[in-house]
Length: 188
Image (cartoon, rainbow, N blue to C red; front, side, top):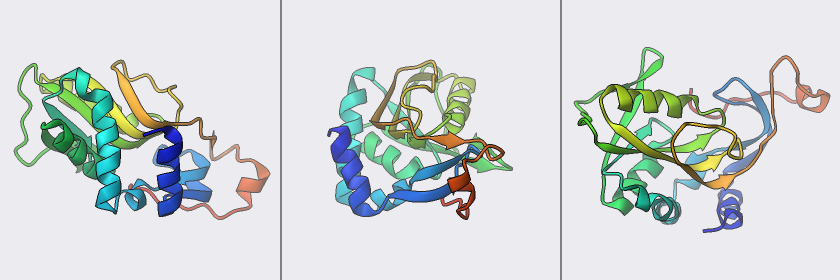
């Protein structure tokens, strides 16, 4: 799939929002990718998952790990497309942890899959968890890279959409954005 085709899927599903948004990172933006809206239809999930799986197949991952909530649907589909195991990390007392009896074997080849990345904080947390368990992170795949490749996670990284989406510190909002009510539509 081309970036234009993926963007069109987001527009058609109403998943590319315009307004004043507070991102998980604390930054503010005029655009918000609400991947849950794009991923509510299984044919779209299958297409996006196949496109990501095609990009990461050469990495040889045996397990896909996704940060909950955003990465769950697309992470599971990428794992299915790769014929790999799927597990996830989730919040506990404000930070991501590996729970539910999931284990990572020493040297296990792990691909991390996320829906949207702006600064990469949750992905970095997930990388740290995998490494603490002895796993080897072979790469990161995401549907939307809001940094247009600026986030360096130290491993091969692929995305279906890579855009430099304008973000603002809350104390330095442009006047037009400051006049709009801010909403936080993503996960907490």
